[in-house]
Length: 54
Image (cartoon, rainbow, N blue to C red; front, side, top):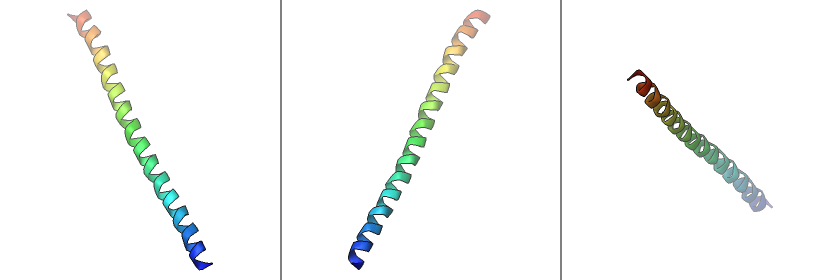
């Protein structure tokens, strides 16, 4: 009985650890995608403005 409880507790802890790790990874990739999108948007907005000014 004790072994089953410890086994179930270990599974729950592993699931929590995996969920937190996935959340951190998703946030990290989301931040990378957002920064890349902002960078590309900045380049896209910068080129026409430079062209108009020139």
